[in-house]
Length: 234
Image 1 (cartoon, helix red, strand yellow):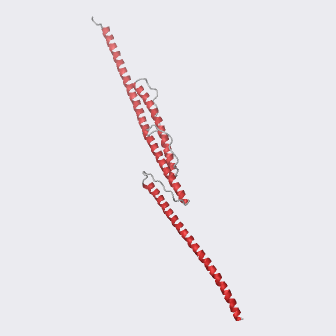
Image 2 (cartoon, rainbow, N blue to C red):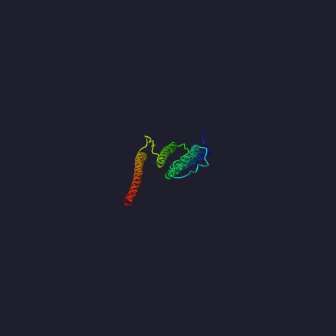
């Protein structure tokens, strides 16, 4: 079949229309993909800053389209909510740790961290701190009880020092035990000296009584002698 001029014009027009549609579709898709990637990149940057505590919150993705980028943004929103919940747990535990250490600095050892976290590192830190406080409180209680006993002149007991105690705490406990031994020896020595002094005092008392008796006898003898002298004088 021979194409007429009008047919050729129609074919060219159709091709031009298809070309325009293809260019428009490709451009729109490209803009949509680039825009989605930019949104994803901004969201990811915000999450990274939130993760490393450079910011306190992240603006969640909104107006999510039903495409591949939209599905990724939905998952990132869910991830952010989960991570935000975990971070709040971590901050609560860390806050209690700071308050607990502040009380320990004041000499209060009965405080403990009670909050929990799903972060195994934060949980391990909490467990380690509470364990340290348990041992520290037990040691300080032993030191207090033994010191009170020494203050009441009871030197029989000594601090039972656990094998894991080292350095300054070990020196402190050993020093208190040495002090108790020294005070006990002094108490024994004072008791012996007191008993000896009591014996000497008793001996001296008996000697004084004997001396008093002899003095009385001597006085009586002198009175008799004086009477005899008076008779001789008369």
